[in-house]
Amino acid sequence: MRVDEEHEYVEYVRAQLPRLHRVAWLVLGDRDRAEDAVQNALTTLYRRWTRRGEVDNLDAYVHSMVVRACLSDQRRPWTRVFLRDTPPDHAVEAAIGQVDERLLVHDALRRLPERQRIVVVLRFLCDLPVADVARVLGRSEGTVKAQTSTALRALRELFAATPATGADLSMRRPA
Image (cartoon, rainbow, N blue to C red; front, side, top):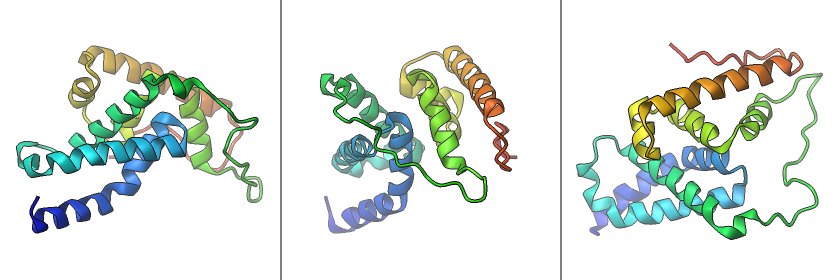
């Protein structure tokens, strides 16, 4: 790879890294495994960087690489081993009765089945259209729509059961 291409790669990764980590963390629920999945995806991206012009939407392409790395990580037998007594998350003290919205959303996402969680992350965090999500996951568009609908219904029920936090956690897409 030429020096100018490598510089472009580094700048792109530097700008996207926080978002990629967040996507992987939401899919896997474990920061360490999420970092590994992102690193694996970025290694693949580095090898393919010279062909980036062949891709219509580079961000969607990279997000799909991260999700595939997460799915690959989930299939490994060692991921089923859980060696901790308690979850690695630490309780956050609520400020004057308010709960951090991110923790609520993360907890609600963790309660969804894996396939629904991945669809929600790709559709709403990565802002991918149904067709792209279907292509990334190798599912039909109808399946993606059904899983999105079921997941959003479950999330609404979870949020409705959560005590009022003063935050608007409705599942409306921004205009």
